[in-house]
Structure formats: C-alpha cells, structure tokens
Length: 116
Length: 112
Image (cartoon, rainbow over all chains, first blue to last red; front, side):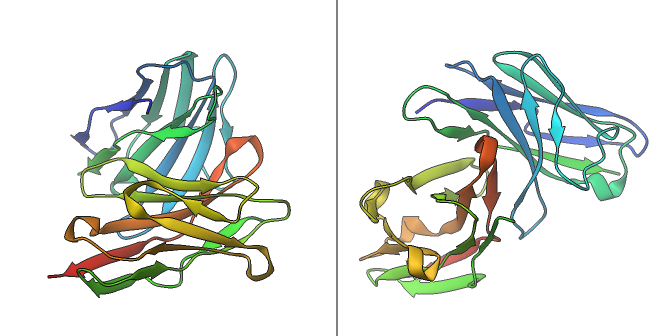
C-alpha cells in the first residue's frame, strides 16, 4: 500500500513556543489530508481536513488559530501548534486520501508532542 | 451525527481462541466501515473495509467482519488468535468528504 510519513516522530518543546509537524505522502498525490489527535488510551479525534491549495476545514471545537494547517503541495501538509501549552501534549496523526482505486486513506505513524 | 461505539475497552483471550470485537455505529446514510489495528509505535493499518455488497468482509491476517444494518454493527472476528495479534483495534465510519470517525478502541491482550 501507499506510504505516509510524518516528521518528526517525537518532539519536546517548551511552553509558549511553536512546533511544526510534517505529513508527506511518499508515493502518491493527495489533494486531501487529515489531522487527528489521539490522547492516551483514547481514540483518534479528527481535528481538521487539509485541502491542497485552499484553507483547512476545522472540526467543531478545534482552534484554527492555534493549530495552523498548510497544504502547500500535493504531497505535503503541515500542522503548526502555536504557543504550545502542556495541554497540547498529545499524539498527532495525519492521513492522506488517495483518490485512485481502491480509494483508501493511508495513515502516518504519528508524532508524539510533549510540551514542558 | 456520526459516531462509533466500541463497548469493550480491554479484551484478553488465550492464544488459539476465537475473537470477536464489537463495533456499533450511528450514521445517517449507508456507512463506509473500517477496522484498523494500531501496534505500539506503528501507524494505523487497515484490516478490512465495507462499502457495499456482501455483508461478510474478509480482511488481512485472517480477520473478517460482518455488517449488520439492522443492528448497526460491524463486529470484527478471528477464529484463532495469535500472540502477534495483541494490539489496539479501532473501528471507524467514513463520512462525508472522506472524514473518518473512530471508536474509542479495544485493546487486545493475548495469553500464551
């Protein structure tokens, strides 16, 4: 199957700083990518839909000014957590939708963010 | 609104025993249903999916799932569990614009 990578796989940052997470589709182009957040022992919560060349669509309750999403190319979406706080510590997972058959979403391995 | 319920947080089965993981969904239209497995440090891996047609779906690693519209269920089964199946399993429903909504997950432990 297709491969989606995330970088970094883990990051520690200080409270008040910003951190950028990259999501890349390695062997296909993805006009649509998704960002999820997973709390320990909990499910994945959809944060936003990242659309290439246009603004991201955020789920209800997700602060768009805090979680900046940019989908500048067909193979790259970035999530920037701005002015991070300890409560932003979480596991962030991206997925990329391949609009060729069999029309699947492929998930990245995730990024562990710890804010100290 | 769409939602997915996995009522079992933890399940422990003996190696070689059969397995059934429950999943109930709520969705206004015909759902697209998925089961994923997540191992520690690994990304989500698709086990199987249901879009339409035959309600019994075969997946990878010997897993199968049955879509029951009357019960709004999509339970995952395996006739004989292997120690390597120990992981967390997520049921998901695919909604409009390819958005996925996940259940809370079921952690499977396998006893030797």
